[in-house]
Length: 139
Figure (tube, rainbow, N blue to C red):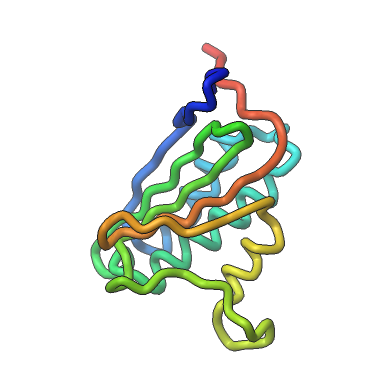
């Protein structure tokens, strides 16, 4: 992150849109954010929910991919980009007791802010979390 407010990609991973990729997403999140980050559990839960939603409800789950990206943009921003659902975008449903829509409710409860960004057919769910930015280093 520079003083001019630019966004800097910390880490990015693209995986097949299959259920078994969720374990890799959780491990990638833990590695990218760092075990000591105060919001790690919330970040990991939200990213997992967005990933699973992408696999279950979009073309990503029918032979496509999902990309998970972490960005330094003042705070930590997690982005989950799927292959889209024919123009439909994720929304927060009005019925908290409904059969579906719980994933977005979880994201709404745990992230400091979140939103949806369309990129053609693809959809990105972004989630903002306060706390220190991950420090990259080591051998």
